[in-house]
Image 1 (cartoon, rainbow, N blue to C red):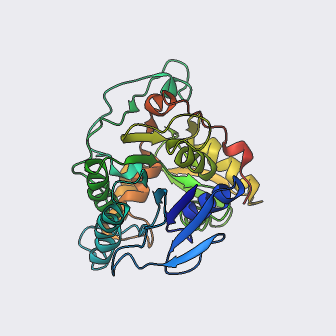
Image 2: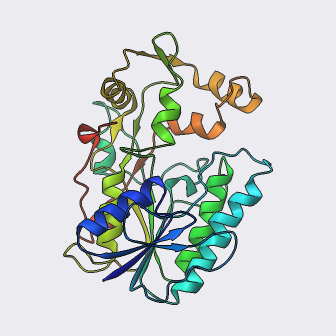
Length: 312
């Protein structure tokens, strides 16, 4: 079986390429640079369609991931990579089974979640409840950065084309160049300041995302998933502070977590008082978001990796 992967030099794409090759799949990596395994087909998402003529299956991982505030001049490039690039992949795929790796950043943060379920109750303290986000949560507006806006536009194209769309949240794992390095860089004088009180949240091990990509294509012993959007996350949500203490320990950083008022953190993000602190980063760490995994589990998928497996 011949599997084409775009963005195979990136964090998620590289993990997928290695896992797929280990399963015996014939992997082709489409991007500007060769991937970690398999053949290389040069492709620039800003310049033309990828050559998918010899592919049986396609996973589209390529994306521009930067956390750009509204109006940033680089958002035009991000739109070209994330939206126009997706359009080019869909056109080249020409109806082949395709998995589009999107993001939970597409969800409108202004709209409260409508349903609650077991994924939320496992992460709450006794006597408290939190609602989970299903795939029906609004995605049309409210995004806090260019990444969320362009990923939402890209996945609308993919859904219209009949693709499987995966929505992971806060992907972490070995080789992560984005989430945890930026967070750990904020440790100062033995302290890690976090906005607001402790909250429950979903995180996604890159190995779980990889497994979901392969399962959605019918490569792990269960049938291919029907077209549509699917939340992807670790089996059990985490308490934010406990999760980050685990990460600090894994990195051998003897830091203590402190809490800043969430309102003060949002103000600092809006005004640029703290370099690198953006409204999206504050929202990611201060708003409890638990993804409902019912739809993916109904396809026979179950996440088997978690923070206990995490190694830098």
